[in-house]
Every structure is written in C-alpha cells, then in structure tokens.
Length: 110
Image 1 (tube, rainbow, N blue to C red):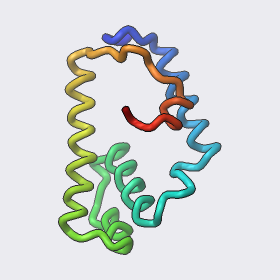
Image 2 (image 1 turned 90 degrees about the vertical axis):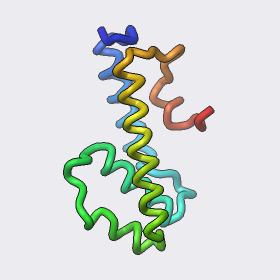
Image 3 (image 1 turned 180 degrees about the horizontal axis):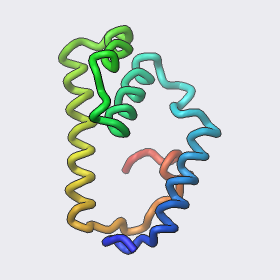
C-alpha cells in the first residue's frame, strides 16, 4: 500500500487503463495543432526520460515556430509540475477521490 492509501494493484490497474485508453484514442486530441502536438511530445519525453533529453528534442519545437523564450517556458512548466508532483507524493498527500483512467483523459483540470 502506498502512503496515500492506494493499493499497488489499484495503481497498476489505473496506469494500465490509462495507457490502453491513450492508445485507443491516440496520444493527443484530434483538435491539437502541430504546435501543441510538438509541445505535448516534448512534455511527454521530458517527463518519461529526463536524462535522455538532447538538443534534438528541441528541433520539433523550433520547427513548430516556438521562440527561445517559449522553449524555456515549456521546459519550466514541465519541470515545475514534475517537482510539485514529487513534493506532494513525497509528503504522502492523498487524493480525495482518485479518478478513473477515463476521467483522467476526458475531464479538464479543475
């Protein structure tokens, strides 16, 4: 059991459901622009494998028209959320009502 009361099998099922839902509908919303897709791809790569990032990961962002300042903004937003999530997780802050995988993908942030 995790500090916030989630059972390990519930976490595994949630992540598995989330992955299957994302594969079924594609990684990004159909209405996302090329610019938004480039930023989302960058955010995903930075989140999943931060140590593997290279200058090549910035190329699609530049090709989508992001300026150096916008690249830095995107980087800082992704890094901040990674930091904030680790702080909350590290302190054992519990979710009031954990979302289902479908809710996580379909519901806009509150």
